[in-house]
Structure formats: structure tokens, C-alpha cells
Amino acid sequence: MSGGKNRFNRITSKEWLPFQKSWFKYTDPTDWIRSNFRFFTTLEATSYQVFYQGPDLDIATREAKELGFEVINDLSDATEQIQFALIDLRSAVESLSFEEWNELKTKTLNTVSELFSLMVHRRFLMVAMPNLYIDGSYFPVAWDLANTIGMQYTLKDEKIACLEGDDVPVESDHFHPAKGHFYCLYFRKDERSGEHRMVHRDFFQRNSQPKLRVHADSEIPSWFILKPQRRNKKEVQHPAKYPEDLAEMFVQTFSQKGENVFDPMSGTGSTQISAVKFGRNGYGTELSSFFADIARDRVLSYIFQEVNAGRDQDVEADIIHADAFRAKELGFPKQHLLITSPPYWDMLNMKGAENQAKRIKKGLLTNYSDDDKDLGNVADYHDFIRKLTKLYFELIDMLVPGGIMVVVVKNIKKKGKNYPFAWDLGAILQEKMHLLPEVFWLQDDISIAPYGYGNTFVSNTFHQYCLIFQKPN
Image (cartoon, rainbow, N blue to C red; front, side):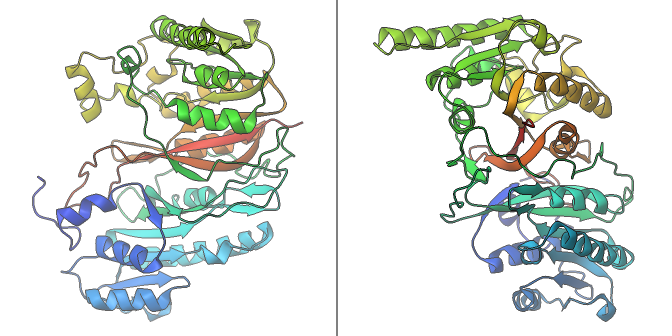
């Protein structure tokens, strides 16, 4: 591994890489606290202190002592600067009301603000916490707190801690996935602190879920690992195809046989194939004529294959080559489920990206299209968000009351800045939709790159948000 001397922490490159994956399976707080302490503290700065606030002070104290540091859990005890701070709010939010959360938030922000003057320049604060689920109401408090702390510190990164076990939710009329997760939110005190601004709306507009139109004895956990099947020569042309397995999970949970499923950015037809496979009708639009032809060919081939095998397919499928903004005027029926994975801003147009270089070498497309109507070609982030949410607001009109929209996205790191794309959509779309608990598609088949080695923490983003919304009845 290149990158020169490690000036950031005390670990070898062999330890550095695994920590850079943006998700991890969680079982033992000892491992989790130890790995953070080892990654975010330096051997040379033994006089600096570490701040810990949470339920496992005994573990934190022991681990820090082994590394040669002192842990404090009261800032009045600070005698030196703080080189790393870890605030663990997991147990604190387990049984809170929303009103009690606001009190805890104020207390936490006071601590974080006091920490700022004590923190060593360019060192990290980490906050661990889940979002809040209360009797059918879902409050994305982690996103809200990250946004608020990001107004003083620099929001740098996130990791998803995936709780292992066989947790199955109590049968309910509301969607509540099995298993569980919490967020590890990373902030840095640096020269950009205070510059961060989300395309912020109120995170708490429509947090009380209506009863689901389709009963969810959900088999969807809050996190899952999918390894995409090998793509054929046509499919591999698409630079960001998601696997059919992903769409199948949502089709089976949020729709019934004979109902309609729609994808406004159909790509190579993954959503429509998943729909017809389970007896739903698959519809969509696709801006690129190249990909629209591939999608139609794939869907029709699948239907003919099933018919030839003696499995009659009493379904409809229609993918129209058109701008998604025209979808409402194209004569599609009302939809019960909308699944979409929009462009991740203009990231496919970023020059020099490792994946882009590999695709160029193989003679493959590196973006969706060069069309001016393609949202993946919008250069300004705020303009991109504005146009994308305008599209989604129009598509919501195509859903039946109680219909579901699933948006597959991720937060974006670009040129040293963090753009919380998923959180922005989660906030803005609540103007017309109810927010349901998010779930994560985790990727475990991609090589980890040593971003920031020796200098700072930059994770490899291997988790995708599946944001789930329900149209009011």
C-alpha cells in the first residue's frame, strides 16, 4: 500500500483497511469501542485525553488505559485537549418519547458545543445512535442530530452498525423491519467547520405511519447483504444497475398479485422483471433509448421464457422511452408500488474515478446518457435536489392512496465534502409522503480502497439506503 508514513493513528495498513468499510456487524461493545479508539488516537499525543459518554464507561476506560490514554466522561475533568470523543446515545434513546428526545438533543448539543473548544484541530467526534420508532411513528432523529452538529463541526462520514440476531418484530399494521441497526456519525473539527448546510427541511413532518394497505409480515430486515448476479453483455453496459433480488423484496412486501409496479428510471428493467416474476404488472419510463430497448427486450424475453415453460403469465409490462417527467401523460394506470434508484447526482461524470477508468478500458458506458434532461448531468447539487424532488412530487400523483414509494440512494462524498443525499430526500419527500423505517442494502463483494491512508478517515461507502415512503390514505 502506498501513501507514506501514517501520521493519523497507531495502526498498520492491515488494520486500517477493514475499518474503512462503511458498515460492520455488531455483537460486542468491546470490539466496537476498541476499534474506534485505535483508529482515532495517535501514539505520539499521549498527553491528550479521550472523552467518552455512554453506558460502557468501564470498557472505554480499560481500552484507553491499554493504549496509554486517559478517558474522561465529564468535561469539567479535562486537563488537556481532547483528541477523540465518543458519545454513545443508543441506550439513552431506547424508550424515549419524542418530547424526551428533544430534551436529550438539547443536552447533547450543549456537550458537543463545549467539546469544540477542547478538541484538537482536525480530530474526530463520533456519535452512535439509532433513529426513533414509537408505536407506528418513525422519527429520523439521527439525521436531524447529524445536521445540527454539522452546523458547528464538519460532517465527515458515517458507518452503519448492523445488529446480529434473529429479532422479529411484533405483528403490526405498520412496517417495522426485523433485526436492527444504529448509526456511527463522524464529525471533525477543522478549517471547514460550520460551513455545512443540508438542503434542509423539517425531518418531522409526517412521522405517524398510516396502516399499510398491504399487510407487512415483513421478511425485510433492516439490513441485508446482496451479491448481484453476473450481468450479461447488454446489462453490463449500464453503469449502476441494481440486482433483481433487491426489487423482489419490495415487490413481495408492498404489493399483491395483479397490482401495478412502476419505475420512472427503468435502466435495464430490473424492477419490471421482478414485478412480472411475482404476478404483478411492470411499468416504467426510461430516458435513454439504448437502455429502454435493453429493458423491453429483457422483460419480454423473460415473459416468453415463462410461457414456453408452461407457466402462463397473466401480467402486463410496458416500458416507454420517455422522460420520467412525462409519465403522468402517457396513459399508465394508477400504481401500487413505485421503485426507483435515481442518479447519485453527477458522480458518474467524475473524471479519474477508479471504477470509471475500468469501464473506459473495457469500452463500457460510464454514465446514463449525455442528454440535458438526464438528472445525472446536473452539476449543482441544490439544483439537482430541486429537480429530482419536483419529479417525485409529480410521480406521487400516480400512486393509489396508501401506495408505497421505495427510493434506493446513498449519501455522497465529493471532493472532500459530504452531501447527505439520502437524508435530504428523507426530509423533503415528507412534504407529501409518510416516512417509514429505512433499510440498508449492504455490499460485501467490492475491494476496499485505502482512501486517506495515514492522514484522515474516509470510508468506502458500501451501503445503500432504501428509503420507504407511504402516500397518505
